[in-house]
Length: 429
Image (cartoon, rainbow, N blue to C red):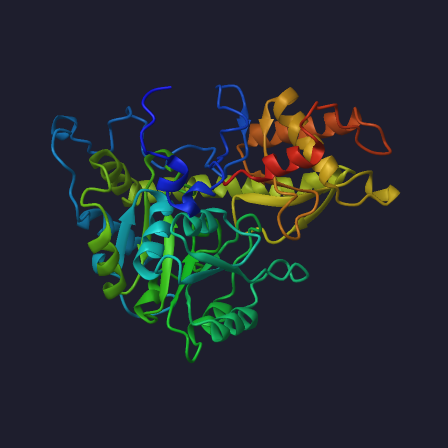
């Protein structure tokens, strides 16, 4: 080892950062080697919503010779197109404008920016509604912000509980943000507009409702509440191009907010946070011809989602669908034995199916059995027609090879079943 000196990492670094568990994402367990069918990260299997028929440079106006220059720090053109898409006048007669938008490196930058803007480290708190997207809690820990959990109602299809959220807000003025995922992840259910309004109407709470609409384009056309920020200054709405638009690789997220909130976030961001190629690709994706491609791909995904809803229950070791169907994934139970033999949802069975699909069949899904109310559950992204057919065939084949009275999980040495479950469930995706 080199020079010791007085430096000590354990006492120099922030304690809350030292306590962080390593970030694990969907590609940590099973890599994309070009042969696997990846139904684990809720990506768009039909590809980017760009007109690429005449070659990859046909549509996006990427100035390669201008890459020596810093990008536009304001992204007005990109913001204008996104606002035009969301100005449906379903929830208000008012119009969104670029003044209502903050854009960043994926939704993760948006989540973090809100925490840095509104929460004082070591003092303020946020509310999350598990089961939910894991990055809210990760970002809170990085920023030394306590997380108060108000679980969804597991007996009512994982609906949020506005009365319980409001009770938490009344009892603790240190809460500044309420993160609500709609459609939920991993629950795929929309949060009713009336439930959001109940929280917005809290008579004394001084904070923001953060509605995460990453998957909203797989929901009915009037589902997005983005334009509602023109009516409610305490509402902000997150969106992304990673899901329905098939552009996860460019890392672009957005926040719709009042001009005052958007201004604060734009003031604190790095000056050139969105790269020129990302901006060009995103702007192209939001052009009418490419929005039409997105909607065409969405229709194909919804068709395959309906196929999964029909065909998965025909497999005797598959149980109930939990939550909703308003997204490009489904949350489904795996049973310890066939339904007609009294099978029950089982983490052991779900983990075994998850591992065998990935390790022996090249089909990667997501184990969610350790989440609240998700015993024995897999979250399965909707793929293309051939991918869904392959998924169904491999599940049938695996169960045919299992004994009828339960799953025998292969010896995994020191990695006990509980540890394997925890590792598999720890993926943030």
